[in-house]
Image (cartoon, rainbow, N blue to C red):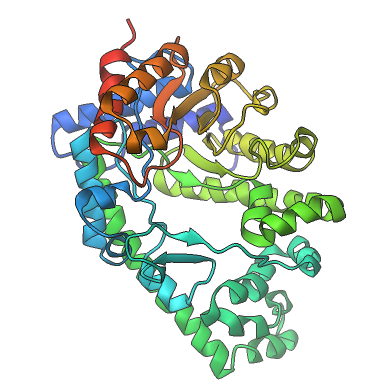
Length: 443
């Protein structure tokens, strides 16, 4: 910020992001495509702001469905970037929803191969070629590691966590703390730990994975821009996580975190507090790069049934709320994907600024969600993936009409599926999209 120049408010920052999202720096394929793009973004923005758009936006959330739909395997999507882009484009153009079709391929398979990555199994690597990737549950952070995480998360990630989840990076555990490299007298101890053949090999693996990912980002980025140029915006510009989920999903695992809430609650609370500013920075960084203010936050362990309301209020919500408010302060829109059910959480999570967040619900009662959050937040969802997979178009139309009638009343609603779609009948996706366009028009 230039000296003497006033610091923009959160509202001013958000308006700048909204304008950046509405007017991206790209060449549209036609004036009609640009007009369609701006109409779609405006429709979503109006819903987020709790205003009444021209009609209910419809934004399917896809996993590997576009890949299956295009006739490719999941393995091909993770290793052949051209096929991945063709699948995204075909799905986008065929269904004509309000956002471009994404695919749940978060990183190229070749990069995972280079690292000998162990946190997931992916198509063709531990699971069949046509199966979506699967998480490998485990305690990748030990009980005795809490203090190391709390004292220096970056050091913990570099010298403890990465060596545990990537076999190719195991030698990094031998590195000395980089914080010791501060003056010439202290440098030999740190530098010498980089001199071994094993560490050199690990760093080469990291470089190889980085180069492959950079190539993948370049290709898929251009593909995403091409889809935008045809009139279809992205629904999310960045991602982050709830601090408790970072600890419980990625580090301690289900068994570990459940035991920790009883055996070492103070350490859990201290750890999630330490992770909170890092989660805010993660969301801000991605949004700044994309120019899109929507920051998706998938919520896992706060769902009904995983923890009691008392535990939710103690361990989960306080730091998640601070992440939400921190993102809002930066002009961003937290886009919370409440996986599972949040029926017992609605009266808690409504304690947020009005018109600043969007909640995508999976198994939550949408009538109750509208009653609880209708004056607070845009709600999104919750067409069951099971219905889209085995139901009929008439079944889907009836379900979506009911959602529009109740959840879509007076705006503030986006029609979408409840959980990401891997398998579905294409005619049912068409039915969901067309129901929004036919029955979601506001008079």
